[in-house]
Image (cartoon, rainbow, N blue to C red; front, side, top):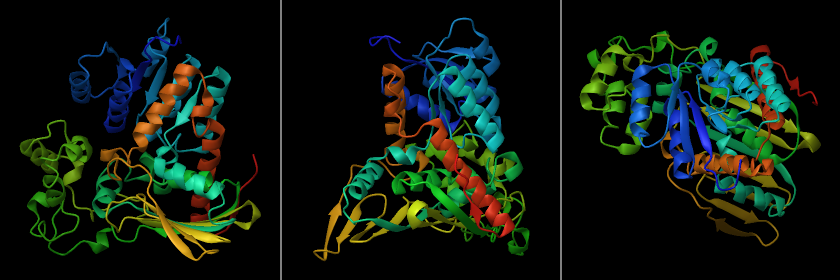
Length: 421
């Protein structure tokens, strides 16, 4: 594309993530020219928000791909996880650069096909591993590369999902059942496994894992609990009460965009009440509608003996990730906001505070990381400079493979070697 032409972007899947990327793209000067969204009400809301954009609506991604003259330079693919493969492959073949929501796809076979299609078409494929793009991650990576703690030896990393977020997305929501989306380690924590590879900077060699669905099970349902929170006598004393959680977000613009806009396009007290009465987000979390794990640990050994332990758990507040890094001449403790460096040589501690915008949730753009990802992708497409993307398709596929091997290790109670590719 020419340097002065505005970048044109199509959105395939105008749900919460697709709409969020569209907002960020428009803020960065892109033009939304096309949308594919089968849900009529969500399409109406999307078109109303972007009424100033020259958007053409397509019934299916196939219709978009079949258009003789491309209507956009790039496409955001943010369909449900199980519906990533065909649009990504087809649109890559039609010559569109791709910004693909993570995971690439639920299976290695589908993911490999997507990567091969992008390679064959010569288009850019950026997987939305947003954690790589935060200033916090850049600062931490620079400290390690500059030798601030000597040689890195081991890492402890925690992903605190948040009790209500887990209930929203992984018990009541789209990622509750593995057959409909994928294992929780893939759908939620492929971010973190990818980020660890980025921070450590070495290939993984072995992986093990343990975890289960411990709490959100029918046998743990209180005796007086009902099928829906609106009818439940425990709704004011249960930590997972849908009425308490979702009513509490009304009036907050950030949380009305997410998670409330996931419940309903009518984000009003009346609309939320209807969603809690009729939809999945008003159901008791102990009624067995989910089967993904609610806590998991993953241990990874990298080349040269560097180790990492990763814990993901539902039973926290929703917050930034916490990481402790141990080196031969120092250590770093990070909470997503600041980094405390302990220099063993001088036995001194000092704090490094990277730039951060907003809070940790998707509603706040992951502390500015979503903005940085979109800006990097658009700049790469505008200039043709793939180096602006912090991970290529092959690298994203490699870190996904660690996730699949970790799941195999968890299920088989074995240590899995990571094959070299």
